[in-house]
Amino acid sequence: MKPVTARGAPMTVQILPIDIPDYGFFEALGSAVEAELPLRCKTARPIPISADAYDSKRGQYHAEALLRRSVDAWRDLSAHPTHDDPSELMIAVVDEDLYADDLNFVFGLAAPRLQACIVALARLHAQSSLRAPNPERFFDRVVKEAVHELGHLLGLPHCPSSNCVMRFSNTLTHTDRKSRSLCTRCRRRLEKL
Ligand SMILES: [Zn+2]
Ligand SMILES: [Zn+2]
Image (tube, rainbow, N blue to C red):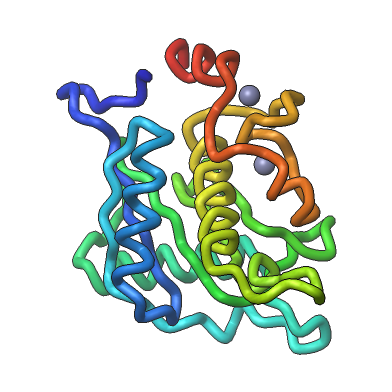
């Protein structure tokens, strides 16, 4: 698969935990993403959540505002005054509920102009009431949402194939139904981008 830098190295992704101090979880997420996309993941230190992006009437964070603030906070902390490295992407991860301007909630959001995306864990914990908590399934959902949003940053649109990770999902049933992987068509498309 194509996305490589001009020097031929794979593109890198900074995984940016927001208020989640679980390094092991993000290392596992990075490995799972690397298994699906031609990317190299690095886990950054957690940053505090930006209260400015919180809408107290809704009880949710505005996805793009939180992403923008988080990218800025990471730049400040990591002495990257500008995020101008075209070979670097960013994925912020937060255990809160997010909304977008035209949607009641989102599992994630990609902002190509920022070269960054965000994944919200809050709704991915949900279980059917009869079932015991299932950490494997939760992790699987996080991987799918992360691969999906990073796929958008790499230029992939939504895909109609039911098993493809680029299929749009706004219910957990749809998320659980699709795989972590790109379908053959999306894989080919990525090679041409
Ligand atoms: Zn999408
Ligand atoms: Zn596809």
